Length: 85
Image 1 (tube, helix red, strand yellow):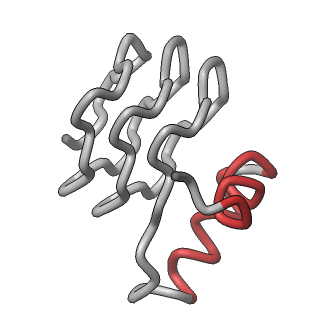
Image 2 (tube, rainbow, N blue to C red):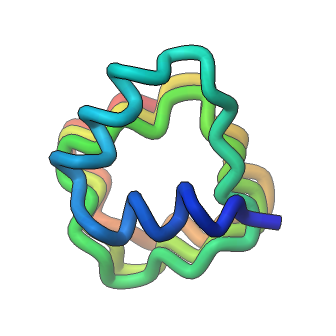
Image 3 (spheres, helix red, strand yellow):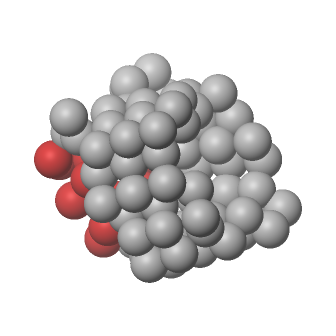
């Protein structure tokens, strides 16, 4: 189950999300089951995030950092140009 506060922060914009991640490097990210379809997530830091069973259909993940992310069952029919998996 996605952490609602984290989900709200992510949906508010990548710049704020990445700033928060930089300020909270040890915070575990729980976005499992989240609906992120169609969202602009270019250059987002989702490294080590729990994204299992999330919906990333048509999300823009260009240049995104997804290293170590748990993506089991996630819908990854997304824009992944230069994404770091």
